[in-house]
Length: 240
Image (cartoon, rainbow, N blue to C red; front, side, top):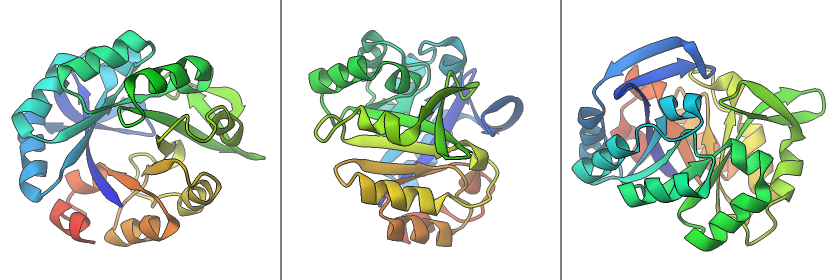
């Protein structure tokens, strides 16, 4: 399982949000120093979210994110406000290795399938942010601001085998609150879609959480607040 330490950016600074809420922000400093620290700890990838872009509906910090990739030597997976093919291309040209597409992947699957086909399955990751509802998990859109009215299983069905290689799934209720990941959800997805490499996001608080996600079949895990609050070291996470 690949470990993706996370950097969330607002105004060029590292932050973490609680439940994706822009009114509940904790600042953690300067992104270049953080990326260097991740690289020195042995990371090969970093997950960078342009929160200004997510709020604006178009990438806002792609030049900074490209500079982070060049300066740190890490492979960068990044998203935030990616709504059009031109947004994907701008991030790739800036030096991002893999671009994360969120709301568009839910709202316009035909377009996103075409982007994956044209740009390469290794260079695009679809992000599905979900909330538990009575009959399963509903996909949220527009920076988690509203529900799409579509269930996660139905959304994934729009990406048949061969149409998607990487998917990032976030249980919004667990994001930024260190309550543990939704292992059952990730296990179900890994079983239902063995053709897709599922990255788990939201809730990781302990090394045991990482072991549970690995056992569940997750291909990757995003780790944010647990690292910043020193619940464990990145070195230990990479070795777990």
